[in-house]
Length: 424
RNA sequence: GGAGAGGUGGCUGAGUGGCCGAAAGCGGCGGUCUUGAAAACCGUUGAGGGUUUAUCCCCUCCCAGGGUUCGAAUCCCUGCCUCUCCGCCA
View 1 (cartoon, rainbow, N blue to C red):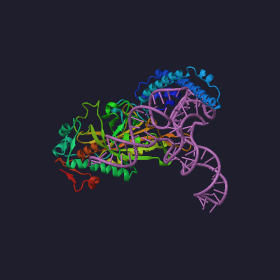
View 2: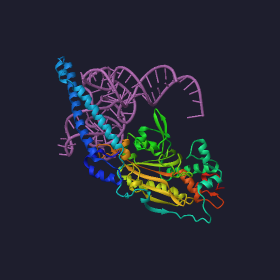
View 3: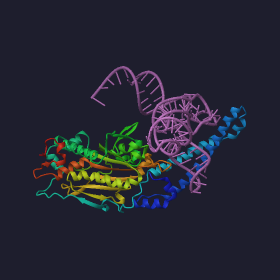
View 4: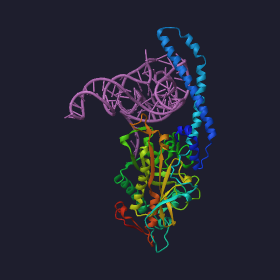
């Protein structure tokens, strides 16, 4: 959610900024509603004040044993007048909340213009693309000939966009997760967390998935409403919802492995082959809660923390800065890390690292005590994948394959793979 | 699942219709004392919002949502959660 004061003091600025996202914001409708809000709120509070004063007087008069009749005459239909004013006000406030919750975050100045991923800007490349003396296979062919990756079974057990891994590939995915968690906790100073994989409405509202993106979620229960988490970002970031954090405790750095569940509504026909786009996938997430002044630096650092994983695995990748049209609803700025997939002859997203500034924090009421200020201030939140484990598995399979369809295990994963050096 | 108890500020905990945004203690912050620290003592210390250049002033909040009342932390209803005991169970 954006700062309502920005709408009152700098509406033109907000409008231009939202235009960059192609978000059609109706300034006039907003201002009409806002002026009604102001009028009704002032009136309501006046009436409340009046009631409070009279009630107080009643108490005092009674205590003295004097006659309260004249006071009751004064009250008249204050009660019913107040009741209508209060309900009108809360209705307007609800309308405003609906509008405010539907407005995306403002973009950072450095975010380039553009409509789609074609307009994203490549920042850097790392690694050298492997040269194959044969036609490299994609992970589906590799996995099926190893008989350890089975999409038909996924359909049998659940539906399309699910997979069953067995044996060494299942272990490899687990090794990847362990390796990532160990690296982030031991070398990057993140705290490992284990969280619920179902989230309630308040949590999903806090990080911005609700109310606008309910279609992307799997609903697991109706009463109480619970959803399968689309990313560990939701439970982990909500740890600080409705809290005031001491300055000394910042930054908070969490890492968390979880399965992620996405309905992929609106992605029909996209990436239908293989493990690229599944309803369920494993991910190791990085989340930082920081002081506002530190968030840009922390965003760069968090992205670098994710890059280290790719570098240690010796997987070629590039870092891109998402353009205006491709940047997510809650983010001010996002870097994607895209890993090279020889089987697809393309770079594909394996991590997405975003700075949300105070957008999530305002929804979450996540604040910190700035001793120089009278009031608690909103924190900034940053998160990113470090990395998507399923896609890392794919990348290793495709980059480390040989002509016989065998897969060499990357050096850093050997401690997690027992004696297995090669799968074939 | 059955029986009982309870949800009050950062924490412990008092408050059963008006003098309560809330006692007291702890903690935090500032000060006195001290070479410094501790102790002791004094002061201070919840959050959100409206109006305003700002101060002032005003409104809301004692788990949540309804209700009774001129007036609710306090009374009534519903829900959620926590604790204790019994049962069941990975």
